Length: 389
Image (cartoon, rainbow, N blue to C red; front, side, top):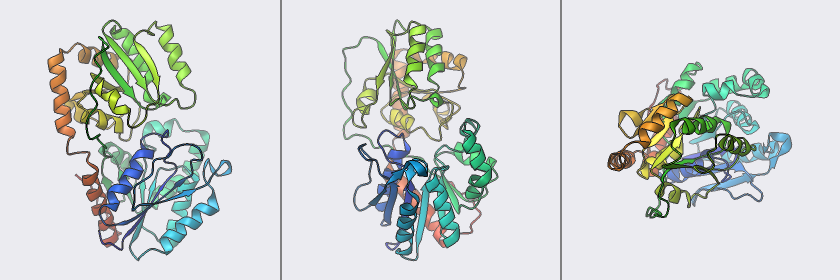
């Protein structure tokens, strides 16, 4: 990119316990900075909680959050910082906003319209049918009052999958869309697998949240009768106190010896979880991408996931199972995956690693994103549906 181009990213939070977006947005900033852009990230302060931040030369600007401003940025401080960065920039600049619904997203949309800025929106899974149908009353009201209009006035969209792009089109949005996946930061060397446990290991690694479909998974596990030969390890932070319901279900079905709630793991330790696993599972009702699936594939694991995620390629390339998010479908996938012989399962994992090797490199993703920015800067009114391969 031309060195005088400024890209301003806005993300509600980069707290380490806030899921995939809090990791992928700083990584995108790093990748774009390597394309010679002047990159800034505005995000909410995290007080005593560790935050993911981009490396130099990306400039990170923390804005105090406020309970009266939707548990995100305080209004005046945020608006002043955004105006300062955009007004002080060179002629070429783009505002890239991540997520919807938050007051900060609303403020970005309002300021962009007023000042005729180029504004890209990354919905981050918030326009899926599941997300919209399971929204609060406030969200439903906000959709009609301003959120639909804020999406309609965006310059363009960034989707992390073809599924998310199609969801945007189904809402009647006709702006350009760049389909660019999230990337994976592989460790320099994969950890060595532990050899103590004699049972085969299946791993789930994500938030403990109703959207993740864990109650269905536990019931399917019970019906598949896997407890004698397999263990299911559930890693991830408890969001909203959902773990108690998971624990109760495990106890009710007598599965305490084969299903373990293991708690949250750090970004470094998660690769040990992948190394110790034989299969990976993410039974979500809805995902805009599912970064853990990309990580599991890169680690050489076959994956079981649902049609609520954009991973149809698993079945197309013979590297996993892509099934309906129902108990019966999950049960069938679990039985088929767990009854495979070790050699066949290992070969599937090797195919997964080869297939993912070049698709999720941040350097390549940075080039794709920079090309999309440049296309918008050169022709803001372009009506094309842009897919970055």
